[in-house]
Length: 418
Image (cartoon, rainbow, N blue to C red; front, side, top):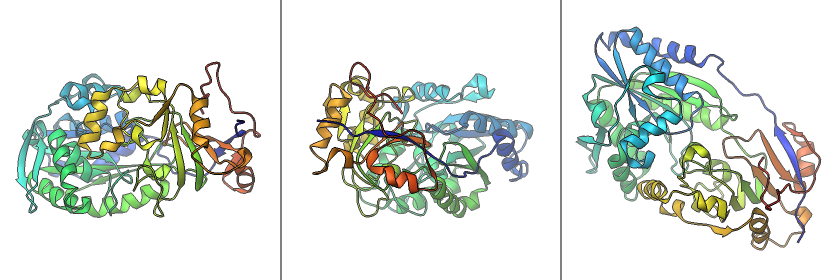
């Protein structure tokens, strides 16, 4: 069977971008006048999560520098639920890979998987909170605000989630994800966040919004009373700026790599159109994607293949790179066991692609709609099959970088990455 010809395409559109990230973050904290709340000598626990946030080490260092400038004593608390294998050292190591260490931040990192229960919601849900953060005089919450890969609401992934899942550690993450089976995500967010803000000495937060090119687009300092309205506003902005595929129908989406540094679900379901059902696009999804082939894991995910179960096809190389322990922990803790399931495995990429054609439709090869991307964060350049040629030529924001040509394989019949 022959294969479709592919063409390289670039997406071109204007995106806001902060040039001096450290200065911008520092200025946002200054605008909150926290020196009226945080006194010299008082401790401040600063959250640091596990997502691959652009400039996260620079942003975290700016927060540390600000609190030092008002003579407080900042320290960093790993705030990432069950990530890093669900261990304190694993979470410290994960932060280190993002450039956040005691040496680079010039402050202490206090890591533990222990929590205290600070309260219980009206629904009977115990509210877990990191042990070290609970002993601080103040807690400062920093996090990227963006659409969640599974839940829908006026608040999704951001500062509230950091207070619940991040600072709730493995214990909290397990409880909240189980509670979602009985109560809605907005209900849990509202109930738990209200108690955390009331009882856990949150002094402020910094909301981070990224553009479609994985760059820092907006930073916003927030006081506790403004967490909810600000996050609602920033989530809408994040939706407007998030990366998108340039086409709405896809027969086969080929993804070079997935990983926890890319998305909580390994691949962003908002991008690929699998937010509401792992294997079927719904009318609520912006992309109708029939089949997904995942051909690798990022180095930074260190074997955590959570999200691999959303794909229908993979190769043996990817299978052999999976560390099943963190993958299982992450999938089960997140209440998404199918995310850790195994797709159909093939020895080579070529075999996987040819097998996928048997499950797509009765289309001639030249009409088959195939998209190949590096990952769901990096969508500036991608490969499209020639079925999209007329669309690309007519699209004002798409630039054709190469005319359609044969799929590029190496000697082992593995695709060359985007």
